[in-house]
Length: 383
Image 1: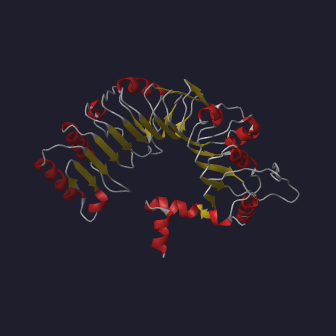
Image 2: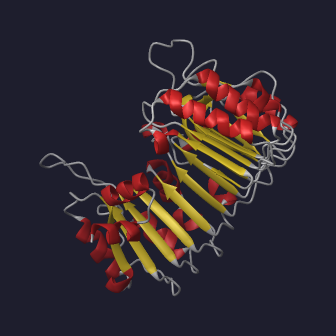
Image 3: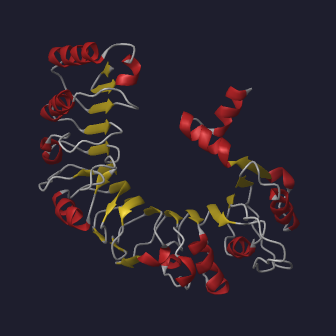
């Protein structure tokens, strides 16, 4: 629980105690300790009991002792939980808050609200999960956090329409409570952008950056999306890309031969549609990626069609690509996908040796993520 410069309070390690005994233990430990504090972590998982007064006291202790890294993971929501001193702590360099969604009977809010006053002059990295964040919140916070380079919002966006910063280098927007009129990003020094769950047509850019890496997993825009997007120009010099979803497919099909060459691209993850039925976009991208070393294909199984129903696809026969540095091709699919062999054979037909191709099941990937282990570690555990 305690080491030099760090305190980690994780109730799951003491759940054989009743809560009162655990709280007394923590309070006594903090009373005895009056030294330098770099990192303070507080974790309650599942349905463990929480006395919010204790939580506020423990967090207040960390702020009082000029904590630099504060990590609070409670997995549940309470309007009155967090002391406001967190958001005006002058020493804080990294803040991670994971709170849990509001209950269904709370009609007013869907996540924890940020206070009106936020001033974090030393903050460099911010991660929020299940915390309501709007454009107005960021307008107040970013100018008062002049060193903020990393911002990660997970299931947080509530009427988020504009993100502006001349300092921000890494931005993640993963999920949302309620979208507004679209998202505009004005961050010219951004080097990494991750966006999950937003339609591609609702993302626009001002002060366009030149990204070194990006992970874009789009929410389907439906039949209204015409494939018009300027994101390819921002990822032109990227070394690592993950591009998934039907919107990505629509953009790359729109103008495959007018796309520039991705000379720096080393790692590519692409898919989110039925690759067995349509490899055209993948082959086009490989034609434009001469330095690619690792390719991951994410296969989505085609829904069963009724007799006589046809699926649209663009033929790839005769299309060639040269990726002399390509060492590994990973194909991710469901265990019940009976047609994945067709995708394997199609890649082999384009000159990729079978010894370079691995098939990985989504179910195994998800299980490894739950256990916090790599696939290799899970395989050793299963053995």
